Amino acid sequence: MTHLPVLQIALPLIAAPLCVLLRHARAVQIFAVLVAWACLGIALALLGAALPGGAISYELGGWPAPLGIEYRVDLANAFVLVVVSALGAVVLPIGPGRRGHAVPPRREYLFYASFLLCMAGLMGVAITGDIFNVFVFLEISSLAAYTLIALGRQRQALRAAFSYLMMGTIGGTFVLIGIGFLYQMTGTLNMADLQRLLPAVQQSRSVHAAFAFLTVGIGIKLAVFPLHQWLPNAYSFAPPAVSAFLASTATKVAYYLLVRLAFGVFGTAYVFGALGLGALLLPLALLAMFVGALAAIYQSDLKRLLAYSSVSQIGYMILGLSFGTATGLTGGLVHIANHALTKGGLFLAVACIVAQTGSSALSDLRGLSRRMPWTFAAIAIGGLGLIGAPGTAGFVSKWYLVLAALSAGRPEVAFAVLLSSLLAGIYVWRVLEAAWFRDPVQSAPRGEAPLRILIPTWVLIGASLYFGVFTEWTAGIAEAAARQLLEGAP
Amino acid sequence: MIGGGLLHYWVVIALMMTGLYTMIARQNLVKKIMGLNIFQVSVILFYVSLGKVAGGTAPILKELAPGEPAPLYSNPLPHVLMLTAIVVGVAVTALGLALVVRIRAAYGTVEEDALRKLDEEERAERSTGGGA
Image: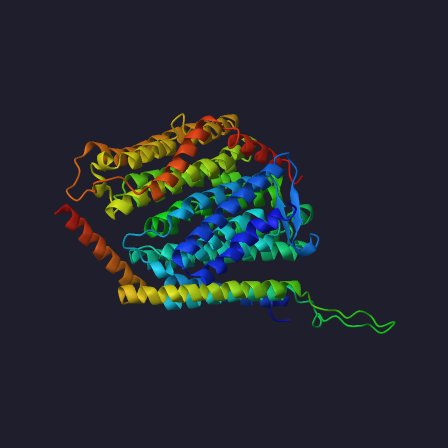
């Protein structure tokens, strides 16, 4: 029990090379899925332990902080850990995809190894209390993500992975520069220690530069507008399972990191008062919401449409952060879970379609709802979630965002949230219209997608419906986490 | 002192800009990776220079004779951090080069503008083919 925080990371990190040693495709698949579910179990146990409100501190190797590396679990990152490991556990069983894929079956073990490494990296960013450790885990997850994206079956996947590698490494290196400045000014790398030492030097230009480098670096990983250029290609050419996992977790973890730095390292008063981060993020969030949604409307490929929709949804999360208030932050944090479930479910539904037709072009979806009713029911519900219709998880997030905008005295921002939801309605409608009201093409498949993919799809979509009604496990925890973050380190 | 004691910062900034410029301006993917390496090396030098203490020696633990003052030594922590960053850099370079090899096999070129043209042609072909 006391070693749960380190097991959370060590388990997938050690399991990844074991996958390479095992090699046998079937054995590796079962092993990797078991590991992913074990991670979910550990994350849930950690969340349970963090619920009373305190923080669990774990000293790696018995070296006490601030000299040693500390893992620190509080409500906010336990919440993120659960989201990441749950999505990993649900998505991983699908595997790299069978039809015409780039991974020959005898090399499939490499897919599972990379996937587990990516999970380990993402969870590591969330759990660690040491800022240099953040950089290392960020790069582990990013390197694994580049590899996974390059596994897409079209050759464009390689280019998408390469440009993501270029952008991502610039982002990672910017984070490294920022960390360097912080270390220069304080002589410590522990986040709690930084929070204690920074106020004395926070007016220096080095700390300003540190904050700027960290924000831009994380902004690239987070795909905050206008740093989102890598995202549409990466998500639309990656294998469907990879798109589902990365779209629902990678940017969310970057968002968590930005929140953690703003509230847990630099401090609310400094970030939102002296530096005015809110004034910078608010227009970017609004632009992301509208540009992403408008671009999604004009896409002719379902995966690409969903990718641009992600740009717009990331805008909502940034909007929540930009207010710097508990309600706004609650909206942003709860959207981590809600959007992960909705977008994960939608990308898995695309995996269903690709498994049956080999294409995700909107023109190939014509009339498919008659052949694949369950898949398209999932897309309809997920689409409503993106719009934020009442009864879906998306509604809960938007409710908090609108509340936050109103209580911040910005009714025009609340109006913008509603207006961008209308735009989401247009791109969702384009998909539904093609699938329901057109005649099927000749080559349309005869039947429903295999249960292997359909069940995970409905697990996520069902969860997004459940958490649209019963919110104590999402919004409840997000609210408590936001309060904990705003009050500073416990 | 050259550069008013800030010479190392100027070197870091010059290298960083060289790297970033190479990544943006060069069309050849291998040259882009070289730019990335120069960019990363500039950050490594930045960290190493953080640990320097004027007049300090290598940080090696030794027994002090009675009355002997403790030697002034450089801060070893930034150097150790950079060992990790170098490993990350090597991994990024290896993966980037591996992708370049795969891109070369799939497209027959590693020039960015040629790749873009090939992708655009393919897209145009598919949209006219789909309409027919």
